[in-house]
Amino acid sequence: MTLLRHTSADQDVQREALTVNPAKTCQPIGAMYAALGLHRCLPHSHGSQGCCAYHRSTLSRHYKEPAMAGTSSFTEGSSVFGGQANLLAAIENIFTVYDPDVIAVHTTCLSETIGDDVPQIVEAAIDKGLLPEGKMVIHANTPSYVGSHTTGFATMTKAMVDYIAQSSGAEKIRDQVNLIPGWVEPADMSELKRLVKLMGLDPVTFPDTSGVLDSPQTGIHEMFPAGGATVDSIRSAGDSCHTIALGPICSGPAAKALFAKCQVPQTTLPLPIGLKATDQFIMKLREINGGFVPDEIMTERGRLLDLMTDMHQYFYGKTAALWGDPDQLVSLAELLITLDMIPKFVVTGTPGKKFFKRMGDVLGDHAQACKVDQGSCADMFQLHQWIKSDPDKVDLLIGNTYGKYIARDEDIPLIRHGFPILDRIGHQHFATVGYRGTTRILEQILDAFLDRQDRDAPESGFELVM
Ligand code: SF4
Image (cartoon, rainbow, N blue to C red; front, side):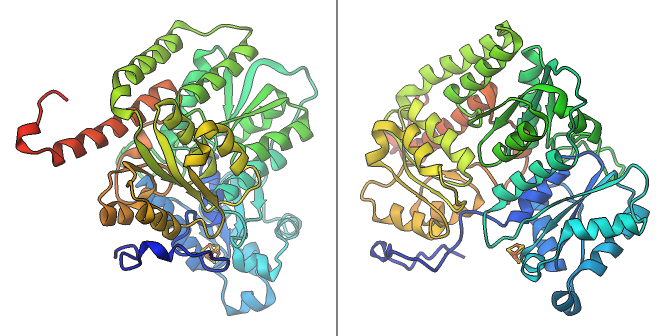
């Protein structure tokens, strides 16, 4: 199916009520992804089987790993009378059959519209003795008629703080730092932990999908893979000396909740994609560790800088269209500006008050030359119309799989980045954060440009060295 190829560029009309191919997915998908980053946790979708099937399949198709989850399996009866009986039965069955340490319940549009009170149902489950000793049920409200998958991720991450984190009342542990990595790939979470450890600090990382959604093939099915943040480690987050939240949308709410609950000072930083944002991350860690940066990190930074210098001649003045999650977009746009490229069109379906300001800060003098939009009508249709109506076609598309229709229709190279990537395999194994991760993005961008140059070159201009 092509993406509305038949529409013409002048059909970029103002809309208030119609979304065509949204640049976001639904809240519970994010809640489910966050819950999979908790060791021995079974996510549970409180709603219909159809919702749960969609959430699980989207995660499974992106990560190429089974995304385990339960569902309250609403029927017509539960839609009318509420889903309490279904959730009670589910809690009992899940603990009996699968024996997780935690069930992480998230709501859906239907259970929110009915008005099911999940904390009250969990209380009822405790009263009925359905929770075995030492087990717990946490919850997040994730109606999908507000927010997006990123806010669902944030809400479930905050639930980990609300339900689990504690302060022992003792002095804060000087070298223990909470790392809330935001919605990134499992390989990114590993990379972030590596950087924190290299800086001489002990990261309490949550959620942490490394070792869960990039787990090795052993020939044995593990219902609960070895990775993920343990309940004990999250419990100790209240004793950490600092919290670093990466991305205000995905990680900010949990960091603020932890400060309110356990008085752990927090700093919210942009996702460390690109030179500047990674510098900010490392400098914050340097403040916490007493002021040193190991040679290994300095070398990685130097390599990135060298690569940027070597590649700069190809990047200068090139334009790109971006779509996806706000935390990702802000850092990606900053990276492109650093490379002397222009992020000409940027859209995100995720609502939120500060996105325009954040993008404005990053774009600086380029703001006039860029179109940025957000919300329900900032969709893939709008992006396509912007690209069509621009006399100078953008040189590059960066975003999730849904952009492949625009790439095909407009014959523009596409770099897959963000969520979901449904038509490529292996991306969860390659970090794009930190200095090392950024080199991967640079390589992808330059390859896209040079592949295009090779493809379009006449025989007389087909060069071995470019
Ligand atoms: S009904 Fe709501 S929660 Fe369920 S799949 Fe659709 S948007 Fe998501």
